[in-house]
Structure formats: C-alpha cells, structure tokens
Image 1 (tube, rainbow, N blue to C red):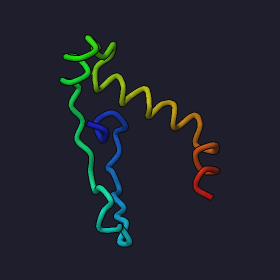
Image 2: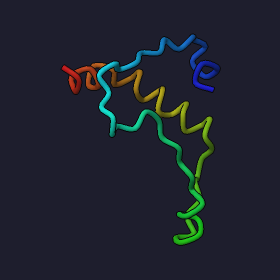
Image 3: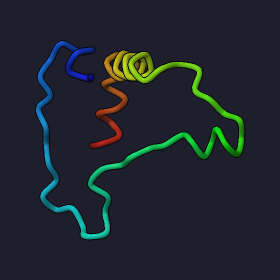
Length: 68
C-alpha cells in the first residue's frame, strides 16, 4: 500500500544487530479499544498512511536530526 501511495519501490533495510528480545514486526488490532472504550478510528488506513507520508516528507530535516 505504501508503494502505491508514494509511487516508489520500497528499499528495505534490515538491522543485522537486532537483539533476541526485540520485535521484528508489530501487529495491531483495535478490537479491544472498540470493545472497552467504544473507540473507532476517524480515518482509514490509506488516508492515515498518506497523511504520515506527507508529514514525513515536509519534516524530513527534523526527522534526520533525531537519528544523528
């Protein structure tokens, strides 16, 4: 989906130094939030990804400073 939004092929980078206890991926499920809190997302996945990609592109210099 990200490749479709950006019209670019993703260049994956893997951290070879990952520790045994580190998570390699995350899976989210909003069922519990809906059940306990009555919460539901206001925007869909594609719109949310588009928003974060746009924000990241506009703030790339700030993001880079975090990883210096």
